[in-house]
Each structure stands twice: as C-alpha cells, then as structure tokens.
Length: 143
Image 1 (cartoon, rainbow, N blue to C red):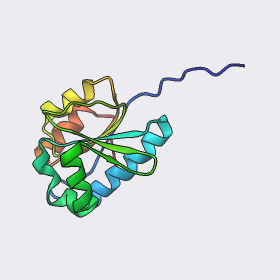
Image 2: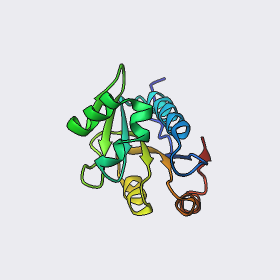
Image 3: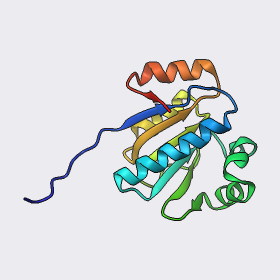
C-alpha cells in the first residue's frame, strides 16, 4: 500500500498566565518544537507586535545574543529548527507553528488565516486578550 497524505488539523494552545511569563514562553517554545517535529517542519515562527518586544522577557528566555540575531536577521538557526521572526511588518515566510507572544486579536486573526500557520500558541499580555482568544478558539488547550 502506498502512503496517503493525511491532513492534520490546526491546533490552538495558550498559556494560562497573562503578562510577563517566562515559564509560559518556555512552554510555548517547547510545544512549538514538538509540533514542528510532528508535522515535519523545520521552522517555528515567533510572532510579536514589533521587534522591541524581543527585549526583556524574550531575552531572559532566549538570551541576549539570540534576540540580537532575531532583530538583525529575522531568524535564529538552531540545531534542527530555525526560529523566524514575524511582526506586523515582517510577514510569515515559512510553514510551521506560530508562537504569538503578546499579539492583539487583529494580529492573531491574521496569523491564523495565513496558509503557512500550522498551529498557533498564544501568550496574552492582558486577561481580556486571553479571554477573547479562548472565545475565538474554543478548542484551544492550555499548555
């Protein structure tokens, strides 16, 4: 029997804690790596509202040098996966899961509609944004 193409539906995840959440960001990257491997993707898209969002918590989790590379080149090559930066001005260029950190619902809806977005992992800044995400994606799961 030959191989059949199986379409895996898009999955949605979120961190239950809002605001600055280094642990949630770490869980989001771990989950996105698992999803990328499961889908055979070599890319993770990191979506933030603007490049300035790479300072602070993102530096704490990824490291200052990694964030500098993302700001300069819009990509961070790792062993088997590359993290690509996505902002409101830098579109998605690679197929794979999206870690959407502190994006508003307008950006979330744009990311979700993009054909290269395979899965969406959301980290909300405000409680209201998280509630809106959960209403928009009722099948989402907490990471």
